Length: 598
Image (cartoon, rainbow, N blue to C red; front, top):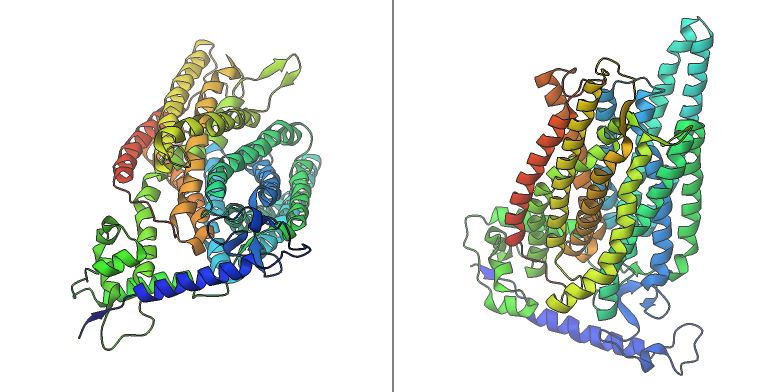
């Protein structure tokens, strides 16, 4: 006989028990309080007063709203992210200049290496998120990852010193052995570079998810604050990037690469200290009950596969019990077969909540895929945009040239200006019309950013066409190192447009993937957002290789950019993102948002 498990009575029993525990908790005085005038008695809130459901403090006690979490804790975590982004962009923003300079790589090879490393740095967080969500927890993972990050940066600094010394010896001696030893230095450099990527794998997804964990989405006030958190998080991130592009890139280009890599190492040590200082204020997820979410979701797919020949149950009563709208239950109906219980399989049977978690992960796949084309565009700002600017007149005042990589500061400045206006002006206005905490849906925000990225690539193609015309007009086509008499300020519009795109799409992706994964998989949600960028970087590298094979290395991506055709590449990317936006819009219109627990 085939039967279906129901959890209606179980759900009611759990809810009753939660109300009893909340009532008992509100009678307890917080540590150090006399009991009179406690916050939960003066300002009772839905969901258990001062007690935050599903969260504990640093000592394992139920977390209290009045003395943990919120902006108090988030400020420490945002500070850590500012420092980490300063360190990361201290490497990535100008990496192509280091590879084509001291390491002597060609432009195309350097771009491929930068994209490969960026891709790895953005994909490895999937592993870090799995470890955090399944075993270590976000807090411990952040500490371990920070130590690996610092070790990688220290080794990177050492490799830069050794490469610098090796280059000096090669220039001052005729001995071949001193030059060949630099190969070991190059190996050390790339080993250190990927050590940083491994450190970021645990740091990046967990820090942001841990920051968002400090806000209780069941509390109306904190729910709105959480939406603002993602905006101000990215604001702080970009502020750190702006400082990097103004200060650190100048040091690397004009003073010393070793110092340029050493400063980020020191900054990461400071970031770890800041993070540890806030330990007593943090809220931690209560991991004492329940099996691994990966195991539960895996059981759904296994059970559905075993029962694929059977008819899925309708379960009207079960839907009411867990408050699932009919469209949720009807989508991906093949997974509903996991709810069928046969006589030979009654233990560890998935329930409706487990199936809904599995469906929530599956719904993300089309969104993830259609955002990859935007991510390919995202990879160009630190590669070909930088090389493009290096050929132009970068004179600010007589005797001073702005480093080409510093032009990325206009992306950060645009974001720093845009986010406060978006958060303080646009969101409240949109919220008054839509009654949504974030004003508009995260998918609408992502789509708007993709549109601005198309405008950015069209602008970049037009500017590059103009630059090539000027180079031809002044007879500089065959002079690769000549400065084209065209001001670098022509590039500002494409950087600014991409800043708008990033402020909308990147923040939207962060909030979307955090909100739409099950509550125990928030680190995985952040890693999915990062993996979009990582796969996009890898696809960019693959696309460059394909174009090189199809057109020849001296056509689109010649080392002499005055003979290359980057404008063709930019037009191609504009067309690809246009297709991506059309596909994304189709997926977004049919997307069913995950129902939050109540």
